[in-house]
Image (cartoon, rainbow, N blue to C red; front, side, top):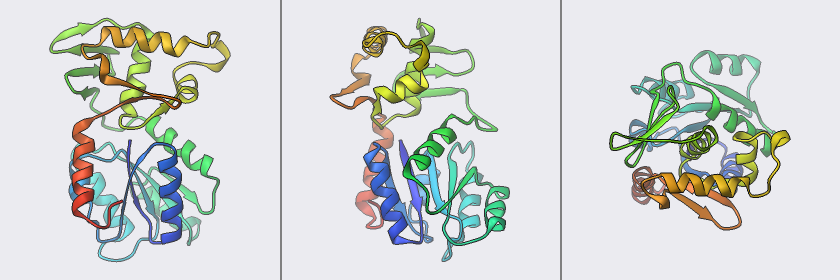
Length: 239
């Protein structure tokens, strides 16, 4: 999961970066100059965390407009309001922001807001999700590879969809239990392991789902990861 942070306070930006990295997110930092604009155009980021009062070459509202004007943009925008009134937050939301937090806030709330935004459907969303040769159709809840259907049970499909939506990020077992299973109906300690094995056996490439020992599972999108890495290597603002 790739997140872009545009925050004028170096202290807040540093706190956000370190917290999100600890949770397994890939983080890029930028400024009002918007050096990462090419990455935004390529749809690399799933979340933009932005100061509600950015000033410089571009303002906060300028950046939101650039992000939202990109065709079929699915990026969610979370505002951080450290200086301002409720009117600034309302203005942010009325001009394309998806959610806003007033700083300071507990980091657990930040993570919860991000996860909530990721679950929120887009006004215009392509129901097809690609990862390598695999096509996942979120409308029909079906999966195929090279025009051949992959027969998945309900939980197997939900597990695969959640991992794909959180690609390039290690998803813990607790998170999977929370979002794919209901804790109240969870009865077996090896439920996740069993479903991961069944899912791998049905996929054309078993290695698609990686086991991160002691942490959880991860699906990598090599194209997105390489594009992000290349851009960060070229631009000293990225980290």
